Image 1: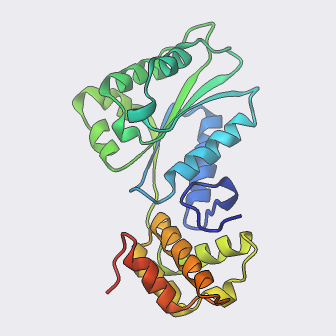
Image 2: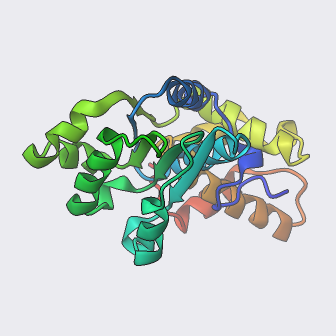
Length: 241
């Protein structure tokens, strides 16, 4: 298992910076029937990982929920998806729409979403939605035409960048899960540099660590040295002063 892949891996989910609490709240609110919830985060902070974890949890309860996932509206918003969304579900199950990168959703779709969330037919189940998006999503929902949709929202969760202690715990957790020994790979200077260079963004921290570990292997070094981290940051979208 690679400890620092750029691809979201559910086995590596770490909730120590609040994502576990957000997950628990999202799931409980869905169970309670909340029509609309939002999760706001800058790129790289873990909203896609959280979205997929929620999707997998809902799929494990197929008798209760029909979970539909739209990962990237700009690429995957097509007629086939719309037909699937419009298909009338069994009234024994709730349809839960999980929409990632929701700031890119067309306004027309959001108006249709409002109709789905507020229209109840005798033979159809309830529709609920969770929108995962960048801060621009808030601006979109602030539009006058979408105010009725924003008014349906029962909760808004924000994912923040990691602080230094969270970066340390995050790196330790990932290395442990991958079968590595953090004590031979991390020291306070390395952690400080990764935290500062990444700005507390786990996606950037992953890239730095992956490159640094590769550099250490190329040097036949069993330990991670500070110069490996500096080398990694020099080829990563990171800031080191």
